[in-house]
Image 1: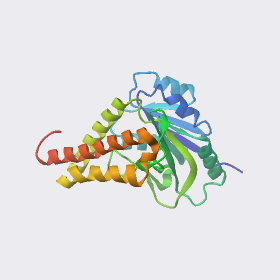
Image 2 (image 1 turned 180 degrees about the vertical axis):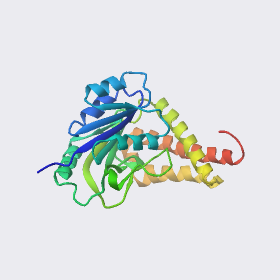
Image 3 (image 1 turned 60 degrees about the horizontal axis):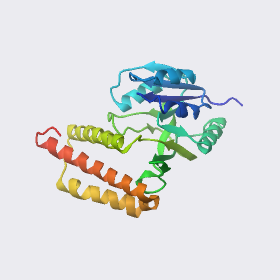
Image 4 (image 1 turned 90 degrees about the vertical axis):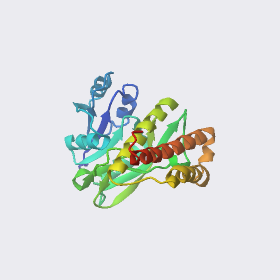
Length: 255
């Protein structure tokens, strides 16, 4: 039986401390494409040492960068990861089994993303299972739309689920998380404002509260202990800041 080949696609910027583990988890793929946006560390050298085909492209948005990476792949079935993600053994086995079956009628596959937070994985609340569509047939979909932040894949056709986890190591420190969320909140507020969305006081006052109740209480975020509490509180602040920035933009202010 001839297996359907898979191209792994990754975008990078200064990921020398994380790229090795990411690429090692993709050893089963037929090729790896890394699109780098001007790293000043040895990200590109490390990626090339793993056999990746390394390309350089100025960064103009997460979605655009990932779409470009998919376009450069040699194979139509692509697996997209960020440099802070790794395919675990169970997920790898599921991907290989789906590949051996020619992927059947699927246009894509979703699987759970398991995020590490201060030395342990979050397994409850809004953090998990966080199912993402990252394995797909690029002839039937991809990184569509015009939103460059919180980008997502969509496909035309059936989407199935695979067991296992995409292990996620998103933050090196709390300071990095807060800085990243600040940038994301600004980008999302500008995106929403440009498309006519407006913020009301309920979005600033009530939505963050509901986010906390839903994630920490109703979805069991408290079961992750103090890490679950910290995560929930930080994410609440993201929701608040996004709405507040949009509210300010409406009044001619630059957040």
